[in-house]
Image (cartoon, rainbow, N blue to C red; front, side, top):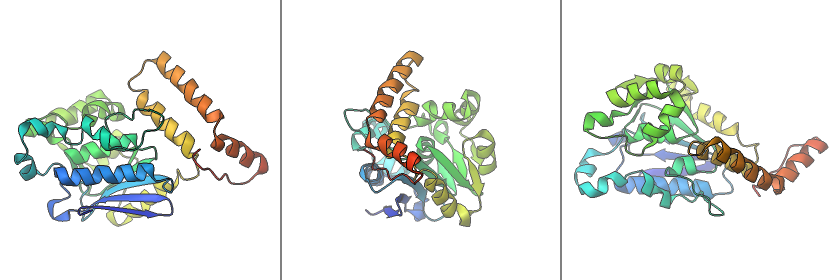
Length: 270
């Protein structure tokens, strides 16, 4: 894959947007590669967590406007949004992951943000489960300054749930960039580290989740993201259904056995 690197080491997959000469801006072709890599991590039983990052001191500077200018207007809204669901491989047993392949990934996904995460780059970071920033990170939902709304829908749906409606509206309606310190104050990121320390910090964060049951992690993510669309009664019913699945899983039996035998659990995700 030309501008997306996919690497797995010790059960942590790293997806790197590698177009530093354009600050990792997205074209349609690169976006397809990116979604393919997320789907690959989703389907890989040898992966327990995923880190998304960018090369060359940038996370993703958004859409390559030159590429967008060459795209027919009636096709531009397809970038990274609901139509991307078809590229995700995170579903099983008929479950619908929603419109965001990153959020649909059944593994914990950590954004390691160095430099600008702007436009679609900010949307990608929003779709991740956890975000860690370097001191030179910048976040900006600049769409209103281009006469647009947030292109994947994550900024207008997930962002208010992460930082609150007022803070989200200030970012979305102004298009202003915020630095890492402000992102930490808002709760958008969980930690801010020096740029040289970012890879290690992201890897350490990813390893927090490797001892958990993949079976339970997947269903926990389904409940968290699915719960944003459901009523409380519906959510409780769905929780009961997935809890029943967990009770019948091999991972649950292994978790109980490991506790009773005072040893580390060896989960299989089944």
